[in-house]
Image 1 (spheres, rainbow, N blue to C red):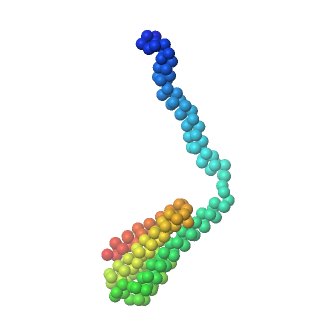
Image 2 (image 1 turned 90 degrees about the vertical axis):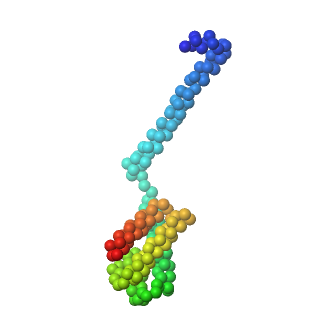
Image 3 (image 1 turned 45 degrees about the horizontal axis):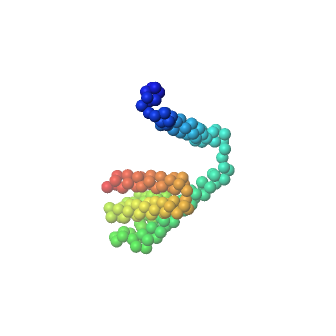
Length: 175
């Protein structure tokens, strides 16, 4: 093949033609020789850290503090929603039922065994939905502002999502 190239091209261009023909191979070879060690280190380093048991002693406490902060943000949002609901309850709902539902939902985000007319049940389920929405918003705001880390926020949001699914299931089974 070199003989064919030599006949068609002037003398100085043979080297240039060979370099141009080999260049993609050199690029691939250089790329693979540089990227393979990086990939190997990147894939084995987390395993090695886990295997050796290297841990930051303060990491667990930081995680607990972040979860407490996320739960506190959610609880504050819930208290604001409850205060608004108790101050301005829907028409036709017994104030004792409103207080009891707000008290119970404050403790465990559960409207409880709301009995009575459908309007009361809808109001209490609506209250709980508003609480969950406010809690979700507070946690997401804390995540956006950097007050909460991703892992703690995700745990609290997962719990809020589970509570929302349970509420939806209970509400559908009652109607």
